[in-house]
Each structure stands twice: as structure tokens, then as C-alpha cells.
Amino acid sequence: MEISPLMRGCAILDARGEVVAATGDPSAWKAPAGAMIAAVDATPVAGGGATHAHVATENGEAFLVREGDFHAVAVFERFCLSSLVFFDLRAAIRDARGESGLRSPDPAGAGA
Image (cartoon, rainbow, N blue to C red; front, side, top):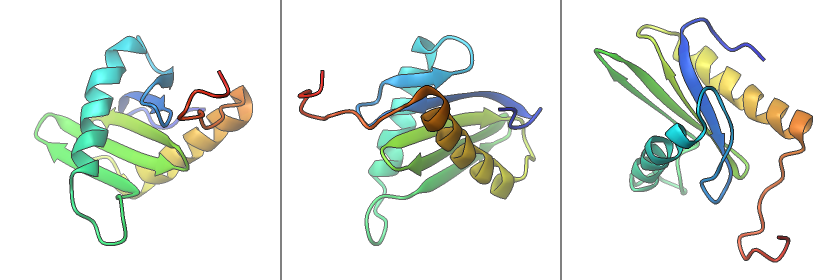
């Protein structure tokens, strides 16, 4: 699935924080994606955790989307259309779940 020519990279993580799909080296995504997820989780939001987040700097933009037990974290060039990015990241998670059979991990490890 192609998202945008402005995308620098993206990773999809499961509920345990494991990278299940990524552009480039998956191990390079685990720590920074985990840090973004933790920062969003630490932010008080009415009704629970935020379903999406967007951080823009002069060097680029970072996005986080939650869809079920999965997260997509992506980095884009400046001035991308955030509403389209959020839509595309949700679609990427859904596509990855369907194409590769991603399932929510058993937190207790009973299914392993």
C-alpha cells in the first residue's frame, strides 16, 4: 500500500510494542515509536487514551494512530495533510491485519 510520497517511514506495532511491519529496519522503529506511544499515553484525555496524535516541528511531522490493539507511527515531510495521513495510517493497519493475518497478541502469552 502506498501512503504518500511525503512519508519518510512508518511502522506498525502490536499491543506489546513489537514492530510487526515497517519501512526500513524494524528494530530502528521500536524505541522511538514506543516513546511516542508512551508520551501519548501519559497525556490526560477525557474518556481514555487518545486515538491519534500529531507532532509538527520545523524538521518534519510525526503521527500516531491507534486501531484496535495496533499502533501506526509515521514520520512525514513538513506540510502534509494531516487528515489524509490519519486516514491512510488507519487503512494501512487494516490492510496489514488482513494481508498478513496480524492478530492481537495474548498479553499473558498463553497463545505462544
